[in-house]
Length: 190
Image 1 (cartoon, rainbow, N blue to C red):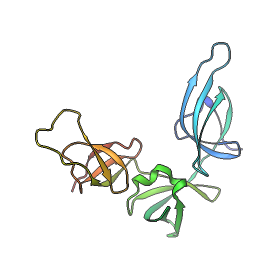
Image 2 (image 1 turned 90 degrees about the vertical axis):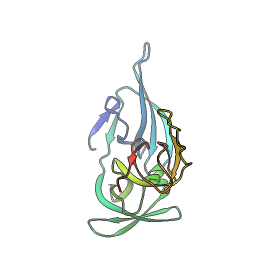
Image 3 (image 1 turned 180 degrees about the horizontal axis):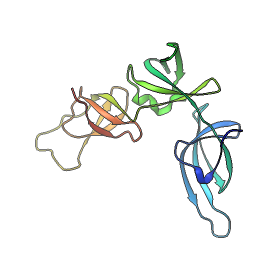
Image 4 (image 1 turned 45 degrees about the vertical axis):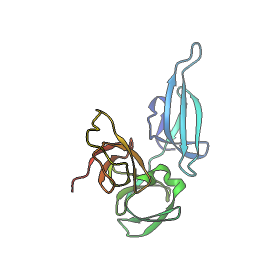
């Protein structure tokens, strides 16, 4: 058994072994009970099949922490629900189904360099850079004089990601998006 963690060590993104599977913590919240001990309400994602469950653990419950081996890779292209990557150390091409990647697919653009997360020879997911450059496929035009502070408009990127952008962003522009929050950062420099 590897490194053991308990509920006080939880953080979003922590990967643990639970019920014979590998799970990533998506959300968690500590609740102090009156007479009994504290409880931790969690939302967990199964990294093998993509399912999400909610579960409550007792404070102090212990789990094996899973450490992934990370390999540099490059996103190549998509065919249906299969995404193709190239391992940058061996140049081998590998395919990963959409259900393993989840919402990460909205941040993938050709030639994007990522880290493949591998456990016991099986790809469990990928880690994206903190921000990516995406092309705005469709957004309504901004109107002169429409400068209400804090206002924005919806934009759909070429990858399918929907993001709120400032009014001066137009269709065809490249923008930088935070992969952790899905928020617009800035217009890409030309």
